[in-house]
Image (cartoon, rainbow, N blue to C red; front, side, top):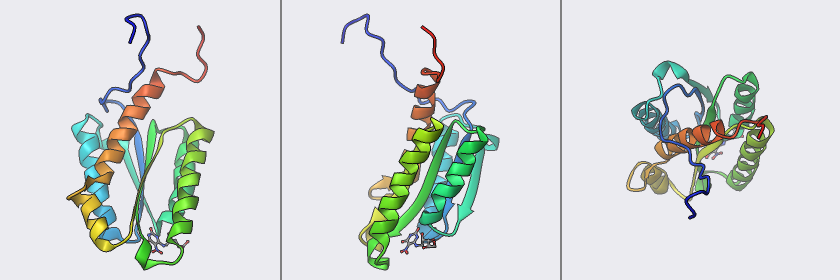
Length: 163
Ligand code: INI
């Protein structure tokens, strides 16, 4: 890249960031692990515990509404939704996933705010175990890292920028 090119990248420094997390209680045995991973990653990157707000809802399908209300407060720099949808457990897993992921994108664009999709979709319980803190890492922790990076990147792109 040319020396004069302006590069925008979000720093991995969470100091001063306010983060909202919405967790689905369905499959909570895994979602609690995702939340632990997210909180641990946020705090290790400098987010203060008092700047983290956590809400619990019945299932992944309910997460977008609470994320939307959190976004509307204007108090957060980034939001994270955490849930686990296991395909074998329901006929409507596909429907939940597509509606929920679309809603996250919509809230994010409507509110100009990072809304990180930390809903794990798996074919079975084994994959859920793998993605909530074992073989395949912790998707809550990676969602937290995404939230920090995106919040810091957007700080460099104010909504009403003047040249
Ligand atoms: N919610 C989940 O978060 N994960 C699932 O695997 C799941 N299954 O299997 O059905 C699930 N269903 C509940 C759904 O999210 C809503 O809470 C429910 O339909 C009420 O609106």
